[in-house]
Length: 271
Image (tube, rainbow, N blue to C red; front, side, top):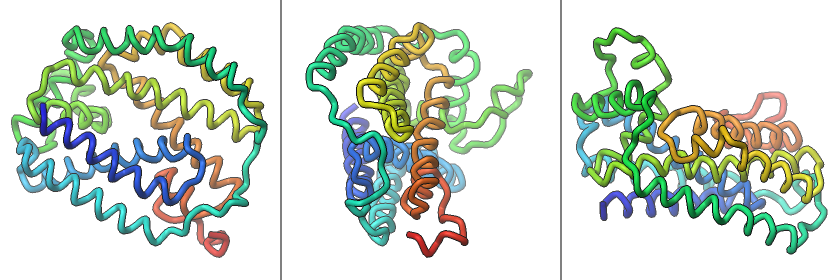
């Protein structure tokens, strides 16, 4: 458990350093941090699967941090975002409204943490398709397909299963994998707020839309489950934030945030 927590802390720190340098908006920085960390875990798993060391915690720890440092050095070449970057929705957020927002969500956060920390994964869909897939990858040390009567076990994109694999590789309590969706729930709210602001909505309207999304029954139900729907939707929302930013600014940093390794040739001069 100690090595797992150390890996999480170091990976988030190493992912936040380049995000902090490249983007100015705090919400955008944290979205970028989580996307960089997720991408790091996926690439680490792919490389270790090719080397047949996917189930080795020592290899996973070292290679992941090396990739995080390489990413940091690579993004140092991207110029910091200028103060005059195109933005919309510049009105100030009311402190009272923000306090009400946080106070209303605090009980949900507390209950989510208690549920995630108490119960082992028990969602029937995840126990059938997702967690067995992650454990099989760990057992065979690669990401090759395996014999199954249900193709959904092998042909779904495995990025989410690699997050679960990361939670299991250090043999911590099984409840650890419950926190993946809880983090996705929080990041999803951040992305929705940012999207509303980029769409020129007022801060009050953006906060209201975020509250409605985070308290929706289906979203809350999956915030402490081990299903893949919520993390998949949050990843798309996070990418959409940078797509909209790229449409407005046509800068390389936003193309990188959206998962596109370079901007379109016609606008490379606008970086």
